[in-house]
Length: 368
Image 1 (cartoon, rainbow, N blue to C red):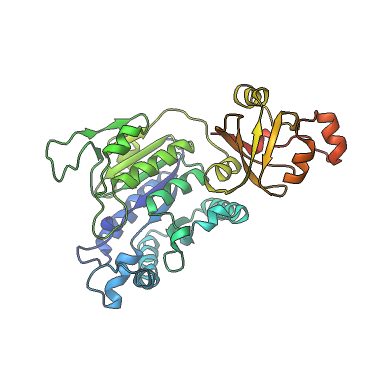
Image 2: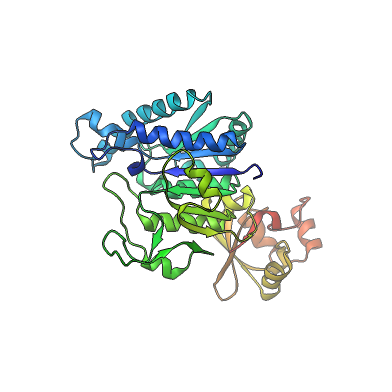
């Protein structure tokens, strides 16, 4: 098998004891499975939950805290225990690890997004295993991922992973909760995530974690849309479990395997992380040029401009019926666009005196 870039996500229930404390035996088993992939030359990025679950006992909580302050305090204690456990486990195999704590803002801010990609790329180049978790100690509700399932999907897109493996305590996706209905149907392979599957999904998260099967399905849908063509959701045991999953022998559900276009980092940021600062209405000719010919958006096709924004802002592109057809990063401010909308390229260029004529270049434009 050729060298692959693989994101492995491990949830709280797969890392802790029943009382919530960190289970070193489970952590060691996961480590050994990752080491087996490293031996075969693969790049591994680990998304690991478990900080809150590992830390709350140390603070004297009998169960996982429900208030934000308690969760953040537990995460502050537990994150150190978690990374210490991984560091010691990987050191036995002479493998270095690096800790990255991310918040939603690291994806929303374009410069931080670029920096995250650069850091991860350099760590992989140096044969280090990045271990990523959400920065639960300082993140606020508006800037959280919701759970580490979505974080794993966004990271897998960011670093253009070949595989996303989400390990959980249930062996795959079912049409019903298999713990409540022994006749529940298991999905062994899905070419894509459908709306019906999202409707079927139930929130069956364990008492130690935050994400259930619905969150994993949403994460798979996001990763798939970002061009991650091989996704696995399921369970596994032993040092060879991850290798078995890559060989198609995993106990769970495989999603994808079809070749889909990979979004570059610029378009990923525009599509999933940026905030829209305004709207541009375009005529029928411009719609056809964008949808069918892969063209850039020129001023001549713009009929209306809404909102106040500067050059470099991200805006929604809508047709004359109000339907959103895309998002893009503009080369002009809203005031400039109001002056040149409807003008041909020659007149627009003379008016703005800019080297570029495109209102939005196709490399900075995403059709939704």
